[in-house]
Length: 146
Image 1 (cartoon, one colour):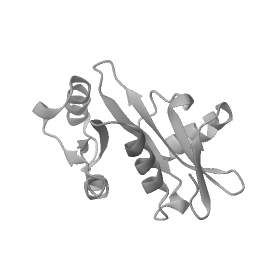
Image 2 (tube, one colour):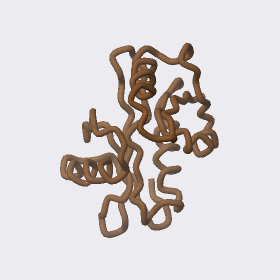
Image 3 (cartoon, helix red, strand yellow):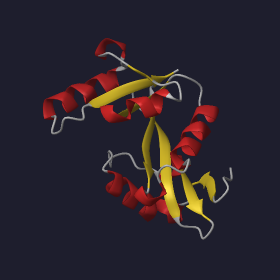
């Protein structure tokens, strides 16, 4: 997929370092970074400016994860492009975990917040752990599409 100034493509092995750097910069979960599940968004010069993946968990649930856009490219439709790509290629349900402050952003795509009793086992465990470790006022939110 091509945006005016960006290209979305499947990640290749050479993108591993860029994916890890973006994930560190975005301060998102650094576990389960298998480049083969990722798509990346690149500039016309080939620079990776955004990434995301869909991970499958042991309970069978699938998670839109590791969605990060380099700070100087935010607000230009890069995240939207990644999200729409994965929604078009994955049947529901699809879950995600995010900071509560991002609730409205993901709601635009049809994601809705879940109560603990609505969550698959993997997300219930992670949400419980996050509440126990809570280090900021921006709580973890689990959402589901559709």
